[in-house]
Length: 158
Image 1 (cartoon, rainbow, N blue to C red):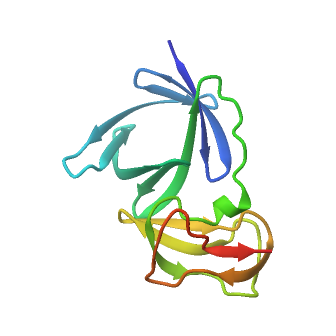
Image 2 (spheres, rainbow, N blue to C red; image 1 turned 45 degrees about the horizontal axis):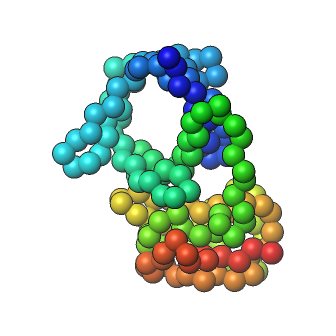
Image 3 (tube, rainbow, N blue to C red; image 1 turned 30 degrees about the vertical axis):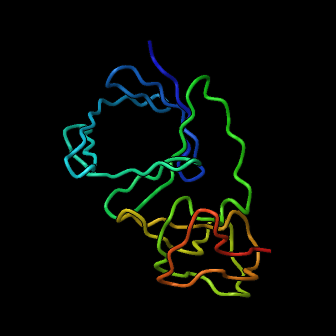
């Protein structure tokens, strides 16, 4: 029996039907295999090509890192119902303990929805914190090199 999952990646929602080692996304089928190495990293093999990855779970979702880039993946099993959206304040907080590696904005700057405001690093993965909507940055509450916790507000956006 196939499981149905709703997967959200970077704001894009996909429905996946999983049966054994076959996954179908929006009508595209592909066989895949996953192996965990001794270092905890994953090797995902699709169409004969292995890709090294790492993953970190948070209460809000899972961060997956590939080649030094990270993306948040949210998976909902069952009937693949739509998820409630993330509140602006939650979107401007780190998903896990992380180090601020780059500030990509400044106070008073106008930003568009999706602009990268802060780049964090955790578990050797970079995680961009993006603007959930267009607005003006009124305050930055972090600095490069600082360790921030999930409760930390990184940026105020008006």
